[in-house]
Length: 268
Image 1: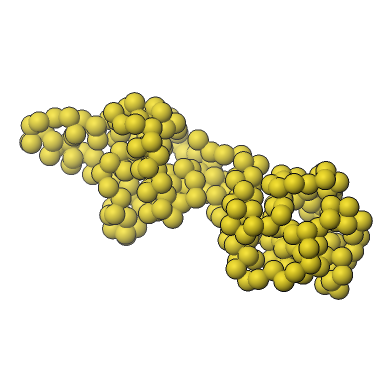
Image 2: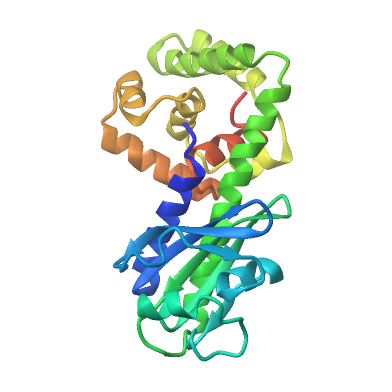
């Protein structure tokens, strides 16, 4: 159900390039606390930069990690704001204007994402805000994934929770299928007993019953095709429901949607 860090970062870089029109979007993944390894490229590259290790404190990426805040340089080769240890590499790649933002989870930098252009120019606030927003989105998705893993690790009976979630999903289906109003009402009462009454739940009442059905199967790790088969829907319809769910919950991934739904008392 969850994506790897590499998949999360690659998706983010595609959005950065699409939304800012930079020539190249790429990432540096932290290796320990002293270096950042450049990888994951979106856009044309000459290959010189691929696999380069950047020392924390040096170059733009290293400076961003050290300061733990986004930075922009209008001309990488000429700016006095960074060290120029990597000028030869940047010059060979024919990159000039550049921006970078750190990805920090649990107070530890884990990556840097970059956007770069082939000419010196002023990179405006909108472009930098887009990059910084993507860095925050990566942080949130990774933090949510870790939170769920932490929850599972300390759960006294993970299998029991999965069985309860499966029963919850089945009960919701039965409510849709039965014609007896009394029985339907009793099943609905049981469903309500399986979800928590929280302040967050009252804030999530815009999640429809059908979206809650989809969420229940997402929590079980079902892919879209299996959810569609279980609910008698098309795969595209399930995708539409998921898009709506993630928007309403403010989630950036299926995993985060499940975490937020449980916190809001929408799932057992």
